[in-house]
Length: 220
Image (cartoon, rainbow, N blue to C red; front, side, top):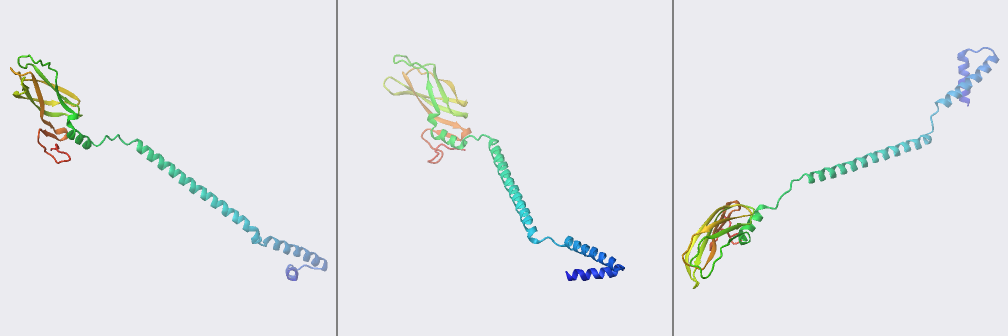
């Protein structure tokens, strides 16, 4: 307080107030002015600012956390959606053809067979107009099928043998050929001797193996 009064006295002298009355009034006015300036220029206590600063920091951290979490969720949803879309756009892939072809070769009697619709009678004089049909139940073309036909007499012996060859038998279809006539015989015995199917690398020769033990009828 003494410091403020001395400061006021100095300001009175600078303003050159005259008379006791004027000096007293001036001294009060200057005193009030000095006190007003002190109050205005006084800093706000730090403890008053600290709660505001902490509140702002907490709010900023909360907003940043919400932004990061929202971004992560959006990224996860977008990635999952893109992955699901890519899976739905994948083309249909059939089973490995090499496995199917190997099954055709190793189990060919389940897919390739020969039959006849001829009615043969024991008292008939020979065999005529004998039709043979080769059935192809694979999904591939058979290049060639060779059939051996044995004409059997009444005593069970083979009178003669003929060969019938059929070419280009389509997938899941049958092809028919007529066997040569025989003047003797009451029935026939048919045997597939050769099958060629380049579409699935199949080479069958009766009594022979062209491949290995796992895939004996594999060929190029």
